[in-house]
Image (tube, rainbow, N blue to C red; front, side):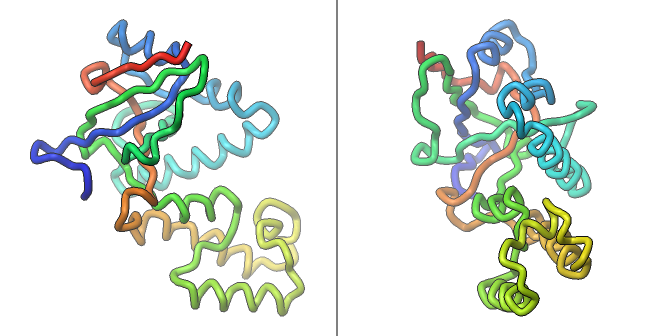
Amino acid sequence: MAGTDASGSRTVWTRQVPSVADELERGVTYRARAEYVRIKNDTIADYYLGLYRWLAQGCKRRGLLRGDAEDPMPIWVALTPGTRLGAVEGTVSLTLEVPASELTVLDYEKWGYRVNGWYLPRDREDERRFNDELARLGIGDESSLVLGEKGNFYPAQRMAILRSWDRLFDDGPNQSDEHNVGVLWQIRREWVREIERYD
C-alpha cells in the first residue's frame, strides 16, 4: 500500500476544529461523536448519521473497526499531500503518523456512489446494464429508489442498489491513493506529528 513505511505506519492529514487539537494536546484520545455530526451538518445531519452508521457497521463486520466506542463516527483523512484539505480560518490541520492497522482506505468515487444513494457497479458494463434497466422502467433518478418512496414500487431495483454498496468494501480501494480517502475511528496523541492552526 502506498505511503506505508517498514514499521507499518502511514502519514495522513486531517482538518478539524481547534478543540480537537486542544483535546489531543491534553492527552485525550479524540473520537468523533454524533453531536459533532449534528453541529456540522445541521438540517441534513440525520442523513449523514445514518450513512456513517452504515459505514461503521460495514467496517465492523470486516474487522476494520477496532475499539469499543458506542456509536463510532468516521474521522476522514487525506492519504497524500495532494488530496489534503486546504487552510480555512478557524480550523487546524493535523499531520498524523498512524498504524496502518488503524486506517481504512476507501475508493473515493465508490464512496460517492454510496453517499448519493446510487447503484455501485462492478464495472462500466454493469453500470450501463443497470442504467438501461432504469431507463426501460422510466426511472430518471435512481437515488429515489432508496432515498424516496419509488423503491416501494420497484423493490428489486431498490434491493440491487442496497446490495451493490458492499462493493465499497469487497472490491477494495483504487490503486492510486490520489483517488482514495482514509477513515480513522480515533486519533491518539502519540500519532500527532504536527498541528497547524489557521487563526
